[in-house]
Length: 143
Image (tube, rainbow, N blue to C red):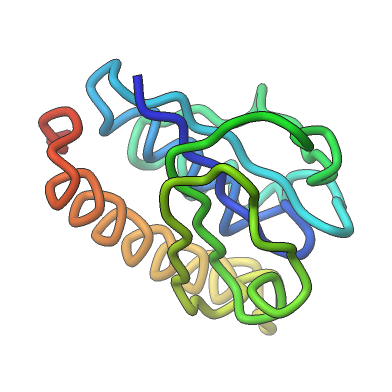
């Protein structure tokens, strides 16, 4: 089983979607977790965008990265530039990876316009998770 920790600042959107996608696409071979330095709770539009692709993240919780201190991970993936700068190098992680993704929580406009941004980021994360799983020979990386 491959253990992956996704980190972002608020643990409300990007890292939550990445956790759900890695778990879903990992074909039972991935233990995915997410956390942030300043957890804010899961953004409702992240839940909605993920429901559109039949992945339910409504039961996931927003966690502080300290909740995982001392736990071993094969991969630690930061999904925002701020987290890369602020989050410590994870001792014992086999590899640290960084994905620079826009923060959908900063989207403005109507709910539909904001949701469009969440969809774009969700799809970008899905593509990156698939590539990550394929490159590391994990699961089948299919939907």
